[in-house]
Amino acid sequence: KLTHKKTFTFSAPSNIALVKYWGKKDNQIPANPSLSFTLSNCKTITSLTFTAKETKGISFDLLFEGQPKESFRPKIQKYFERILPYCPYIEDYHFTIDTQNTFPHSSGIASSASGMAAISANIIALEKELVSDKDENYFLQKASFLARLGSGSACRSIKGEMVVWGKTESIANSSDAYGIEFDYEVHPNFKNYQDSILLVDKGEKQVSSTVGHELMFGHPFAEQRFAQAHENIAKLKAIFASGDLTEFIKIVESEALTLHAMMMTSMPYFILMKPNTLEIINAIWKFRNETQVPVCFTLDAGANVHVLYPESVKTQVLDFIANELSQYCQNNQYINDFVGNGVEDL
Ligand code: PMV
Image (cartoon, rainbow, N blue to C red; front, side, top):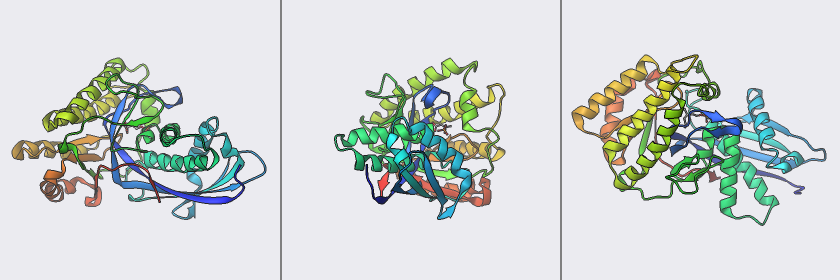
């Protein structure tokens, strides 16, 4: 047991799923595999100070941008309780957790993936101080495993530009328990892929992801949907090798619309897209038809639109966003991001 006091600081990025995780079993086990691009600019930076204590138990203070933030407490308490069986040492320390995001507060960009990945990287840094007989791969897997217990998609924010989470035949060593780096051929077309996030609606979602995942149980189209996710990952694997952007766009847009179709066809049903989400989708289709620029959209569980495009067409797409799409964003706001590599030790 370490008796001193020490502070770590890690940043972890958000990620955007190309093949969507929607539906989970107990213990944050996904009903289907998913595949994502890791992002760069949208991230959470978390410092964790641990101090050895005498009595055992979960004990922590929470700061957001340096100020006490009690509203995050239940989520973090639950996270610590879930990881405790795998990290019994956390009961020996008091933690002070100080966290901040690089993206605007309540912008509708979910901070749960980056936030849970950042805190998990810190916990693993502590574990590294305590054990000496494990290798780097063990620690990476375990960081992703812990992040998953915080928020499913967070396990895809630890390491690698593209990450697969969920056991699936076409990806060797894939696991339901943690994300793994996509380790196959990737054509230069997909190098440094760009993602501009259009902030359509900053409001609270009417239906949380947790409820949405649960509604996939007893959903009339669940089995076909889960099978489709496996197929789409196998297809994307071939597309990443060939560089076929037309086929890439078909899968990515279909996945986004299917995710929202699942929401619209669950019971109770709900709609998270807003009128401006559809305005943007239509404008992207029109622009792509007219210019042949390979730009497409994806959505997460909300109204915001992620605009995805290769670096080679960046100038044209940024002009298009500034001139045409930004009018559909709240206060004309959008964030230009691109593919990144995961957690960083600061
Ligand atoms: O990680 P959660 O439970 O917030 O679920 C995220 C689900 C989607 O963002 C809609 C899809 C995904 O794979 O990230």
